[in-house]
Image (tube, rainbow, N blue to C red; front, side):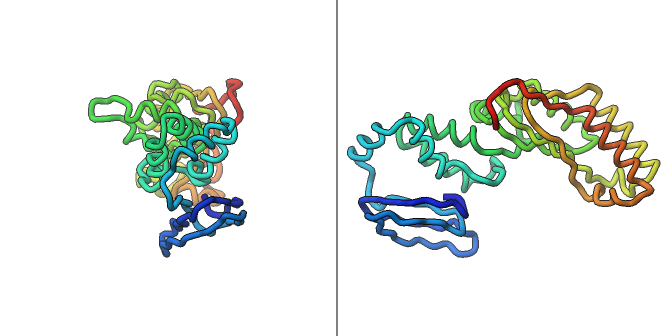
Length: 256
């Protein structure tokens, strides 16, 4: 259960309640033959104390698919953006992949379809230049992509992602985060802004169009000086140029 979520729970046998708090890790046993209302302050796991048996399989098979998805979503849908290096979250999926072929299929669809993933461009390819985890990437629907302003490689990879050539061919939403850090542009003044504008033209010489919904945001230490009047106009020119290079369009796919 994600922190702050609410759930009424009943179970014929005791449940182990495991808190995922990084400060205090605790395991308690909960008896809930009658309905018990839970609202954890930290991400929490509910684990049966007994092995699942034929009775579970019989009951599970009677449920409609919509209810199965709702049940599994409690374990597999997370409010925060997921970095694929976060093994504690990936373990949640791994557990469901071993229960049954049907649950494994639903679990992959829920995990990759409902969550938002942070894509690190330098980790997308193997040493042979092939996409890593192509099946997972094809299943992803929502991503956050970090791009370093002025990086030829990052903008080239972003362009390829927009064309679906990195396995990310079924996206519904993309958040492109342009990182403006870098000593090359510090301190910001008329000269460095002119250099930055030229670098953007060179590194992104064609428009990048995602066939899905999305947004473009800026981050980084340099942009914190954007309230200084002498360079505010220059920063606005840089942002306008970058925004002119990246576009999003709704191709009539399902809502995010």
